[in-house]
Length: 297
Image (cartoon, rainbow, N blue to C red; front, side, top):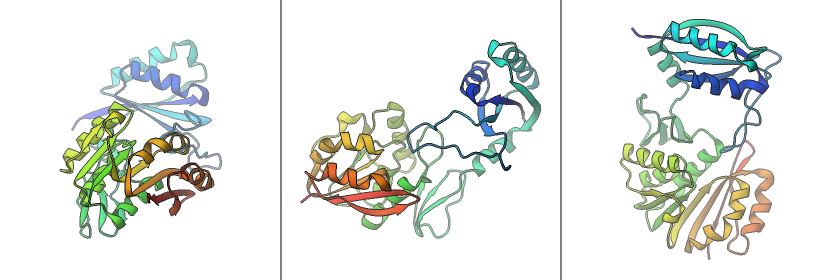
């Protein structure tokens, strides 16, 4: 059975990004960052809003774990790294073998099937589809940004599961992994456009759509054209404000607009920005986030 070697280092917060980049330059297969004080009184929460980087690259005391194909590669990387000017206060915690299959299993175990409704689930490819799932979306972490676990994504998916959209066209603006566009297809939509400013998101969406046997078009924002019966944008408050005229211009009479990526305190502000075109209401709430929806008259 194949083995890999993990090089573990204690690293100060201000050098996490620099050292991580250096490890990748030294041909690490992967680099992970963990809180050295996890599960102690000194443990710190570290996260950012969806679609945005965390406020800091690492914790006050971070453990960097770099994966190498063998012991000589890991040892050479550690030797070269510690010889650099920025390596003061950098300490090697250890080198140890990691079973390749165990590493894959542990990584995959972090991603379990996610229930959206009792009948609609997101299921990683290595898991069996739950018996109660009538509709299952296959979506793996990786190039795809979003696995249905963040409240903003779950709320959008719940709305789609309740309302569907078999008639007319659907636009997913800022599609990321394509999860919302694909969900619309699995729930009956036949004409779907998914757009994003990031070409990697377009690639991820096309791949995920193929895996789920959903027919859609994906591309850069210029792909969006004409009127739609449903427009979805799960981004963040600031871009949603700037996009208000554009998104509303794509709404056909009687069409629905679904906005997510919003904190509760931002709801009134967003409603005011969109008021010239339609009335927005809070359609769902979860963990401090809100989903807003409205219908064009």
